[in-house]
Length: 540
Image 1 (spheres, helix red, strand yellow):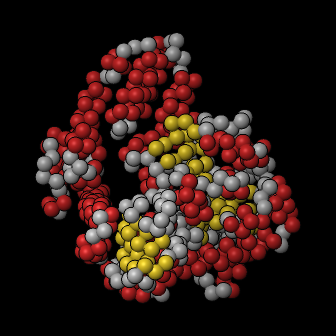
Image 2 (image 1 turned 120 degrees about the horizontal axis):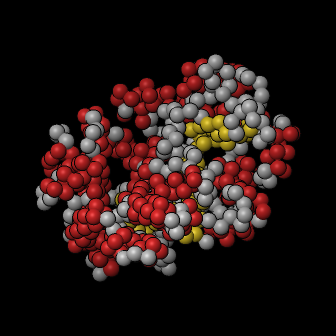
Image 3 (image 1 turned 180 degrees about the horizontal axis):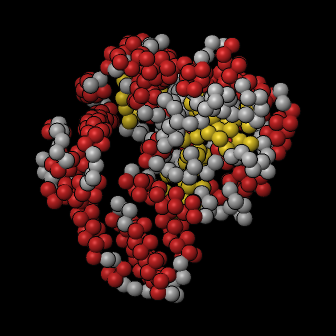
């Protein structure tokens, strides 16, 4: 892929790419503009055409065209590469070697799905009862319908297939795209169609909703099966439409369903997205955290909502994300219903969030009878398990004190021997990491643990030398005991890439800080030298 990156760099000028998002003005040999992330009163964003890089002094960010698109769009490197490749007219399949056939299949799938989305949109405009359902029963306006490309799949069993066949798509290509059922007919029939889009707005699948909730013979929602383009554990619905609002507001609202997202955007809360079901994966959190570290869950207070919030706590804590819950639905069951009751009620609810741990502890109090010995123990054990997921020692102690006071016991009594020992080790590790900024990251420790106890080869240059063997043993037993060789090899590959990127990012941060100091001091020669060093790192 390095050849593809260089070809794209050669074809796209950094000032042209950045200029699509920021108004730039010539400043000598460089360009300057206002930061898209900061609140600078004077232009603090610099673009160097000679070196092909940019630097934002207000937010201390910088990089090349790929890092800029990743930052501004909230996408990963591969997505940025694909987006810029289209602009540059570079065919990535030529650089993928053995993946050329897969790349060609994906391309046809995208074309097939985009055409299907347009077909469904036309079908909606030609069906008066469906239009009445969408525009009057669901209260969606034309702008919202266009924004989310909402359509309709006709009842005929092979209508879409016939349409796509006339345009040159084979049965295999339609199956690849997830549009056909096991009998070769249309998967979606008689449903309102909501396209699932990736982070750059390309259709990767569909959700189909029945028109009447009284229809008990069909599932309310029918989703595209997993394909080469659509992965349930990665996909965040509405992210392409929400990312600009999330970046500006610096928070994201995660609702339960796709219709909740659509209604929320129409109600002016454009920071709303949804995951498939209520389960939030680490990949979901990672995608959202690129745009904001403030994630607000708008889940029901039922068992499924509580379980989903519990799962999200540990993930968010590991990734340094602030997790909260929106809980005031004014008697309504979900965001969509609340919006129908009053748009201002939903807007108010989004601002009335509470920390997720506090919300969960409140739910536990409602669930367990603390006046009974059984309820007392169940509440204590459940709260302890929840708090144990928090990696921040200060927060753990805060909630431990809160629960021990609720139970009327001392802090020491609440903490079990096992919890105390785990907490002591985690606190010590956290203190070491805080005092030594050059210390090992989580990825480095995990990689070292696999190298020491996993019986697998690891690049020794990536392993931090000053690591406690007992700590590595603890990490290995907790995370990797019982893993097969293939799973460990895959984990090592992923960790290796992460550690390399962390080291590279650290170098970038140090250089960014030095550039900012040199710029502030007016040392133009020093700035030029440091920019050259930064360019070398970015091209590695």
